[in-house]
Length: 231
Image (tube, rainbow, N blue to C red):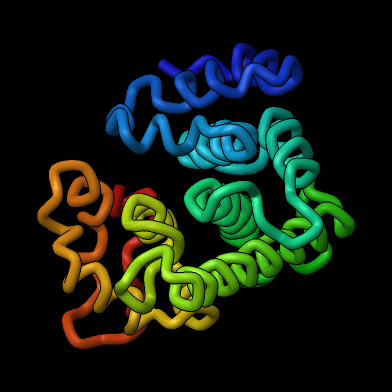
């Protein structure tokens, strides 16, 4: 079972590898290739903090002191260009920020998808910082998709980073409408199909949630299941 005090201690101590493991406690473990990719230099901090924050949001009704510790550290890990390391770890971070945003918005008296003035422990300043960081992170993924095509990282147009990065990004953000509007979503899905990522032993596990995106559609459906429901 997830131990919130231990998570807080690991985050404060910068023990991000152990934090990543703690976030998976009681859930389905990450495939080894995914675990190794998210543990690479420059990505581990955001990946550990992001997956931990997602887990805390799943297990709580409203923001907790641990949520605030994790999001403060996550915001501090963002680069000046908006990314959080690799495309995969950037997607993990953005998904965590959006999950916290949605949790606040779901509280009684919330203002829909926007945090507005902030509720309870989430101040107006923090709410604005979360929205800004999520927006900049999504823009960084848009730029990563363009580079993947222009620099020949992959021969298939539309990928964000390499095939494993692409699978991680979709695992985290396939059901997020804002993501679909920022990137070339139709090309991204086409690259998944043309490269057979759905059928790969590792990436296929990450792409199960794509079944919730209607066939022939170029963006997630409104009212699609939440990230938690599709996990």
